[in-house]
Length: 127
Image 1 (cartoon, helix red, strand yellow):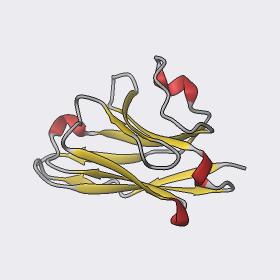
Image 2: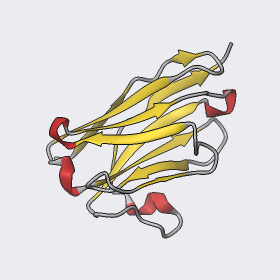
Image 3: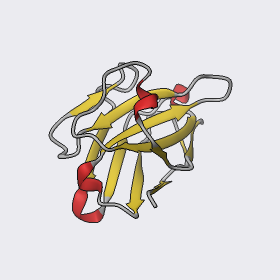
């Protein structure tokens, strides 16, 4: 059974950094594209980043481009989201999701392409 577990969420001050982890179990991450999504209270889920199965291709939403970096360590079956220069508007529950593809999907809405989801981790940016 595919399982994804996010961790690393926390309270951080504006301008600070956090690193989220998405650990997979029950399957080898090598064959899956992983996406990071977030959902703030009262808002729709937003796709923020994606990494191809090999790690050679990444994609970012404009709202996080230049501040967030997605990476993966297939040997550890884990994908990471490094978040720098964080802003209050980054406050949300962050989810990772997997799809059995090689390249990040482009058809909108992106989330429909992802079949397996984690339970989410809370990130709060506040002084």
